[in-house]
Image 1 (cartoon, one colour):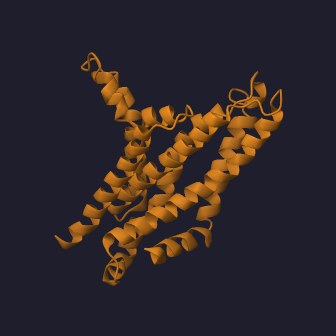
Image 2 (cartoon, rainbow, N blue to C red):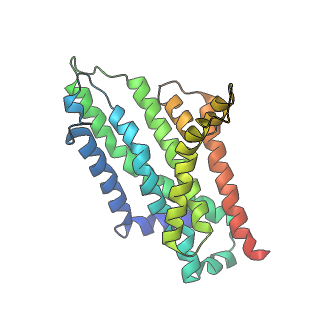
Image 3 (spheres, rainbow, N blue to C red):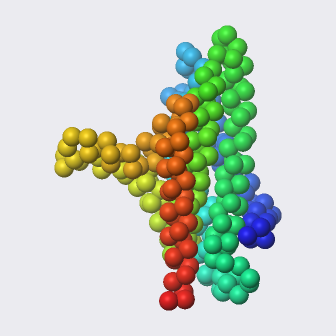
Length: 243
């Protein structure tokens, strides 16, 4: 697993992929937070990082599928997936190695945004007038969200040899698991508290919950369950070659 992890990380940072992902994420967030007047925190009357955590999931919705689309689709297209299978590695080791490598790239994209926190911290009146607990919870939620999207993206990549198809499928699945259940709960067929239960199945509900600064074990279990579920789906997708 460590060999796959190192190979994937080197592939990201020996080409423009890793740097482009980090640059795009930071530039788009920077424009939203400091340049565009409708969302610029410079036009707010109080210090906040809400723009960052509101916009980040939408950016991740397209950025993470772009990271994961090559993971298995490229291996299948080049025929190297069979070479990996001949090594003394289990399919689960290959999946986990690729999962951790993509997650590290997401983490590297998130870490520089601490500079935004420092900027808002210094701009506050009085200085440091920020809800640091809620911000820490939001960062934790953003990391778990990235992990869930990476697991979904790997599953989509394992289904096809075409990277573009993998990207589209991953984006669709991420959208459905993030916002799909919320919109589904608004249908009139759900009455009573059933709509609340449907909303709780979506990632958005748990991301918003953990972003309040209260780390609830139910939210963490949910994110870990989504990651585990799609890693299992990816494992089944790879093992179907043997069936």
